[in-house]
Length: 294
Length: 294
Image (cartoon, rainbow over all chains, first blue to last red; front, side, top):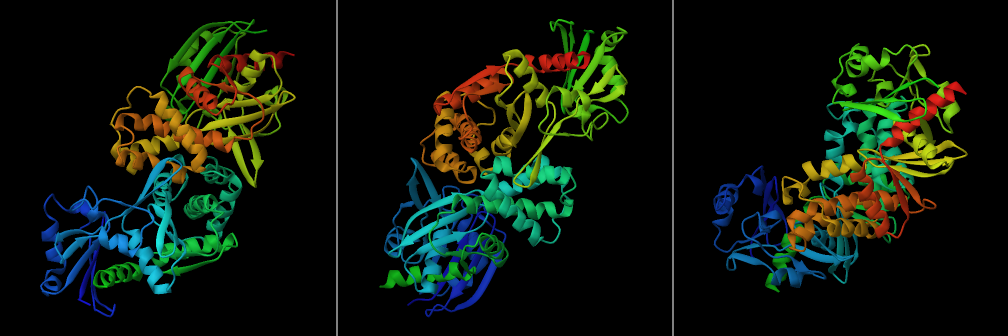
């Protein structure tokens, strides 16, 4: 196999890794040059600034996942319809330089008459599959927009997006609830968080459930410092409620802070979970590169 | 009965009416001096500016409902616990001038271990009951915070708050969905609205359902101009989904614009509704004044 330059180019951040043919991560770099900070036509220059000398290796392959392949990014690598696995992803690469630099496409699926999309997280799912030596399962990727991904036979069958992180931020910063909260988040309060997770199961909908953050404070039944954690529990708990019928243990993929929080919420609801860290991205791109050589 | 000066003093607006002993509304006034625009200690002066000469009538009674009775208002008229009807409301009045000017208390109830509160809308419910000559039913008061109120035996038994209008505004103005929408709301698109209402029933939660506003636009399956109406349908539809087991026809109380929109949504879900306008507030305060004299 060739050396790999793996790039995860999202909306607000750019991360890159140099990966040996055996999959070992040799070096990592990160910058804040997400696609929103790149002027039109500026993508090759930003990539060269970040990891130009890695690309100087004439046999290196560079795979770029994430929003760089969106309409607002470098070039648009159109969404592939599910089900999709490594072969489909490899076939859908958009080559910037043939055989050298490629954008990984996102995936689309359809449910209840509307489409859904994923771009970047699918690589993490494939990395988690490779790390766990599995070909099926339910994968949860928490974040601004959480993704729940169903895999069978090594292919993503379907997935669903939840605007969890974004709705939390809107309620935390701009809603009437924000007025009762301290300006800065205090250290995370696990007890208040779990109370929010549980109340979300009873409220059966955030439009009603979220108001409890106001009334508990109004009646002095929760201190202001605990409200952000409680609200976080309400919003994450609502996501879990909507997926209460997801079969079997789920695999959480993401940064330790978020996967720990989701793990705590799942545990409070007597649901099983295991976690995989951000190394899933590099493993997914490496496994995709391996597919190209097979 | 004495002549009544009825005042509905909310967060961002002040409305007043002079009401004859027989309940006829003789004159109405409105201003933007909601409680947020009144300096500390300034409530008597603002009331005098708005309807001082009505209060010059030595036998007139003045009843003030809404947020003027909250902790941030003129003085705090503590919430009354449900169940509560006219006698409880009359007994809970906070007299600013004994027998002359009073603040109407709000109500509180408890469900799933958390309190809920209502202040101002309860007067509209009592007005609707009086106008309809009923003593029970399900009343819906749409708005920034929608209220669903259950009445039996002439008393509010319980109610629930939904942050529908506020969440719509947050998603419309500050979320990723806002980027795909025109800056101004176009004329309301009933078809897109109803599509949103229906999709909310399938999505079974706004965290997921709202994302469809993004993907339908991304795949050119809904024009940008229709997205605000679609989103409105998603959010109102989610409120109705959460109350899908509310028994019997509901009574919508509020401004024509909002009650028509809710009526359209309920009709799309084969649910019955009738509407009552803003006159419910004056009728409620008048009926409360009548109770005081009995």
